[in-house]
Length: 73
Image 1 (cartoon, rainbow, N blue to C red):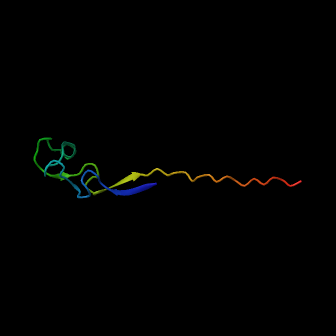
Image 2 (image 1 turned 30 degrees about the horizontal axis):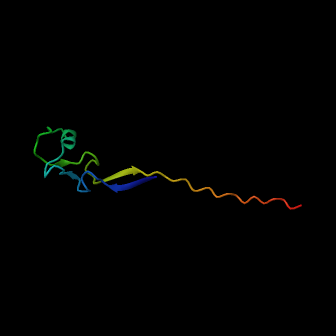
Image 3 (image 1 turned 90 degrees about the vertical axis):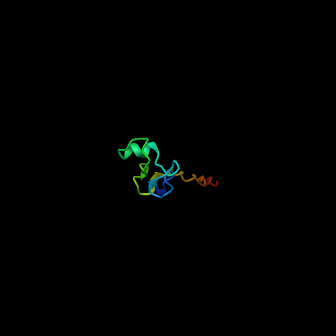
């Protein structure tokens, strides 16, 4: 099952500001900038949406033991 959650990288702000007001090198490279540029770009982890779809593991329903009735003699 898929679940919509807030982006952990940008905390839902849609822009990467992880390094003291500067975008991280991963987001800078994804936007075509140099890693040493002092600028703010959109988050490359969520694509600037602030939310991510994640796959949530489904736990299988616990099997209930079937009542086995013994034939009466």
